[in-house]
Length: 125
Image (cartoon, rainbow, N blue to C red):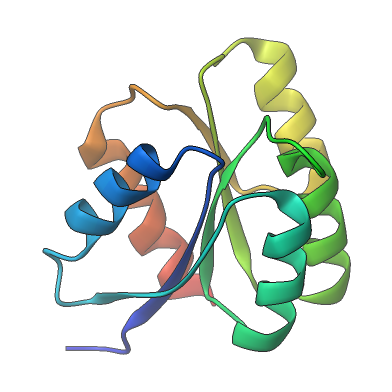
């Protein structure tokens, strides 16, 4: 087995973070290294944790996922960010990708697609 993919979860809804935490915890090739409830926390945590992959909610209080993604990508360009949003419209996806996210999915996406994205990101970091 290769390296463990270091994943950070960023979402303002604790229940959604817990769902992701429990789901990712089933996979031996991934380790959750941190959780943040808003973009400001995400930026601070990313600076100290150096995650391989960040699952980033797009809409949050204090600092949204777009701003947090821009800052993190400018400082940690090897980090792969996957945007997650209730809205998967073209504008949201385009905005996240313009901010530096590698992918952007709806929060009700097929979990296998999200798993593939995390692993693809983990390979390139």
